[in-house]
Image 1 (spheres, rainbow, N blue to C red):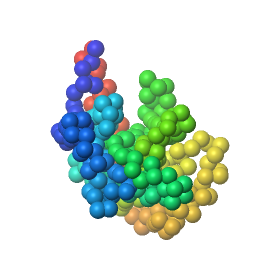
Image 2: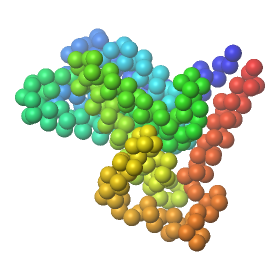
Image 3: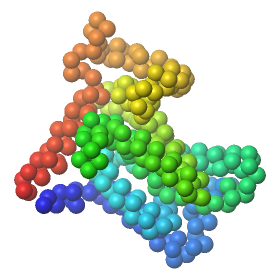
Length: 286
């Protein structure tokens, strides 16, 4: 049996895993530390740092295990493609913005319901960033078949979100994790769609149709989703995606030159790396 799945974890992911485990140990030894590390909306002002620390604080042992395993395995795929600096930048931005939106959501829920539980419930965990990682997997290897689940990788973030929503109907504390998962998925997509720098093109984002917002939904829903998503896309980036290819000389007579799409080129490089790194070494070890 190949041991490759248990090796090749990056140094950065190992270091972040130590942070996650360490954060869990701290709140177990010193429960009072949770009020300073977790996102508690009533205390976020003046304890604004919990917008950052909440994402690295796991309250349960199950959460610590899942987050640590997810980090090192998903990071094993993403960090070599993005680079360590970009990988860390993605984690920081998605984690921070997810906490900001969760804070706004819980405050809004309090004013709507007047239930103080929304103000004092400690919210924390790495699940938002993990869902952002799944969006990254969808981007770089959308058609990769997952043998265990018998589905393509592009459906991972959608299924994770659907599963979390379904579970929320049977749990009393869904506010402690569901908004984090929803915003982590969405902000992960926003970052990769519009903000991530592409050194090979000197542009930002991924304008491909395969990575559009409607690609998270089944085919029959896309005619309804696309017009709505287009409005928000134009608000965020105007006509940049429509003109960027022509500005950089990737088209000829209105058609894309064969092999000139930088996004597709990045995916081809990933498939070549993935095949060598995982499938090739697996053959050598059998």
